[in-house]
Each structure stands twice: as structure tokens, then as C-alpha cells.
Image 1 (cartoon, rainbow, N blue to C red):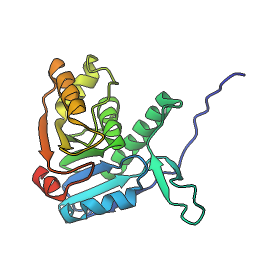
Image 2: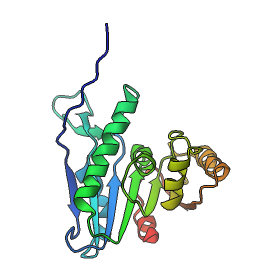
Image 3: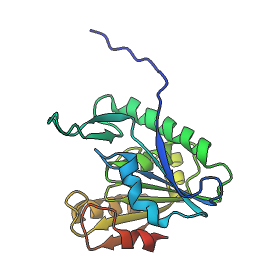
Image 4: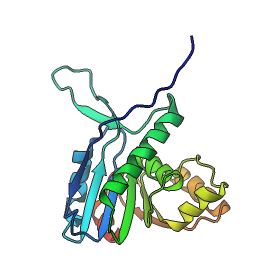
Length: 212
């Protein structure tokens, strides 16, 4: 058996809240595993206005969350371990295309990733072509790849003002993982800000307002 690779186009969807035409500040927020962009975006509605628009792209792989035919709830994923390098390339190109479509004329672009989306926005920042002015990694880690020792990736991460956000009761992004992430960043002289809150694996409204 021989594996073959074919590149093909995909139809992707995204959702917005706030004035995309008038806003000077653009937030691009990437959801976690099993979430849909529309539901995830609801958490950011309160911060959107005429001058701040929030855009939520949806992962390219959708699936049923339950086997119960009466529910058939759907979620989306950015990638899995299967054929991972091609999936990373696909979503980096997708997010670059989205950026080109929505970020023209914006004074400031903030990328926020939650949970699985945190690795997504980190890889996009380091591997993509988009100019990210601020990078918020919420409830997730800076992934071990790309190599922070690689000059271009490290420079792009340094340019994006990096903020790590975690809840003290987060069962996934635990204090041990936070400490390991901080150690890697310090080893490679990547500046960052650490913000914590009393909560779990969630977008905490008061903390979101604090980040503004």
C-alpha cells in the first residue's frame, strides 16, 4: 500500500461580532476541541463594539460529539495526530487567508486561542504570514513545535506580545504544565505576561475584560 497526497480547496466558515468595517482593533479567536465557532464567539460578544470586532474561525474538521442519534451534537477540531503536519499546514494557510480577508486596514490584530486553539494560534503566529500584534494563549500551552530555537519562529513569537492565561482549577492546563511552558519561554528568551484567575477550563468574563 502506498500513501498519496492531494491538495484541494476547502470551504471554511467564520463568525463575527462587532463592526468589521469600522473597527480599528481586530480579535481573531480560535475555539477549543469539540466546540463550534458560533457558540465560542458568544463569550466575546460583550467586548465587541464599533471599534473592536471579534472574528471566530471554525476548525476544518467537524464531527458528532455523541453517538446518541437523538442528539447528534456537532463539534469541530483543528487537527489530530493523524497526518498532523499536513493538517497544521492546512490551518495555517486557512488562517492566513482569513487574515487577508478581514484584517485590511486594522491598526491592531490580536489572536486568542483557547484550549486546543491555543496551539493553533501559536503555530499560526510562528509559521504563518499574518502580522499578529498580541497573542493570548488561554487554557493551553505553547506547543513544543515549531522549535523555539529556530530564528524566524522565535522572532515572530517575540514580536507578538504574548500573554498566558490560566485558571487555578483548570484540569487540563495545570500548574505543572504552566511552569513547564514558562521554563521553555525563559530558556529561549521569549517575553510573556502571566495572568491567572480563580476558575477552571473556561473563558472567564472578568479576566477577558482585564486583558483589554
